[in-house]
Length: 247
Image 1 (cartoon, one colour):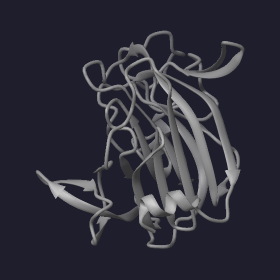
Image 2: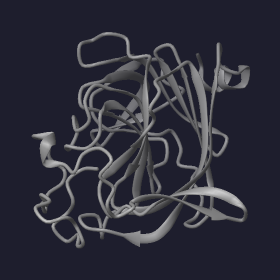
Image 3: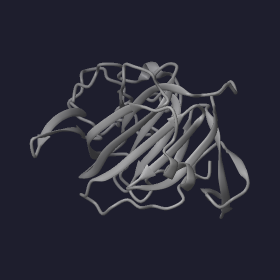
């Protein structure tokens, strides 16, 4: 768990809190591992199916114990209604972090250095490298923003936020299917059966190939539900994905 916002109540005495959570710094300010005192992450049952409920009240990450390499991950996700400071007026936000390596708290005192498949209202499948990693994408630029463009013949490095090709997420309250294909140094993001982002030449902060790591699901100020999370090994991308991604 990261640093709680100053508006969060019911915390143990002496817990460090702050108004601005979007800053890097000493990870020891954070609540740390196995400190989910407010059950930000919990499992419920809906329609006889286990569902991961993320309240969003405190920034945090649910982290896999194992590292994963060369895999296909699929999950379903939908938004709840609650929002929390400091994102009361912002889009509902979460994320699937992959190839997570190093110490907890490298980014905003909470998440590991990693690659992010963004899960945010109207921004499913955007790509964000956190705390050092990078990659390249076929892209175009508009108003100084980078957009994945599968028709581009040029691959450009990504150092900040890059936008997905299309935004096919469903209306609030509906389940979306998100898939991640990770093979060698390439990652393909699929949202509701559409390829929205292809990241190639993935590297860490030291410039070495970034091909594996832990997985994290984010709590980032909004209530969100996950279900039917599956990971399976792969040795190649499916043919239809190869064609759509122009690999």
